[in-house]
Image (cartoon, rainbow, N blue to C red; front, side, top):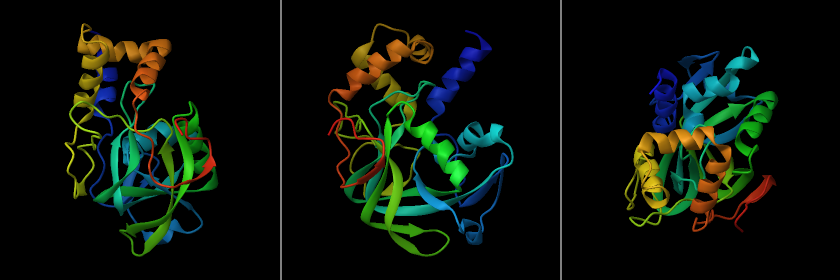
Length: 245
């Protein structure tokens, strides 16, 4: 196995990547102290998977010149972060938000300027895996002070991925209270998919093939989407569409 293969496997299995325990300001690849005043004039968009991570923000915005994004810790009641029913171009099983009564999940809010929101839209909705939506009548508590009863976010267009073990698997890397379903890490979820659809393949070869072969990746996504559970909270779709409704 080449060094590049090792790095690609680490990226696929490392999702959703390390996230600071506190709110922070991402600026040109560095993490700086959070200041609530930096939120002014920006659009708050929920981040619950890799968009919480400085590593992923660097991948999305690092080549675009100087950028700063306040990333504020927040708590959302009656929702959880679970695995979505699609595969990313880099071989991960990504996250989606799902309504779950009794669960309070710790997420983040990325405060984006207009240019950053355009870039985020392109990264999230390019292959129709997410739709940009507004959630009303929610309970969102912000680390920097205050609450909100509506939230902007990217909704999983294909729904979430169940397994024989549970109707939904929260991401083990995302903290929450009130869960009653077993949380998985990404390597475990990738193995569950391989065992279901390609159990004769070597685990590393399976992930690398999904990265390298977009047709095969699309076939895997289509297969795991067949019994996906749709996003179950009423949402106002602002851009894109929910595929399985």
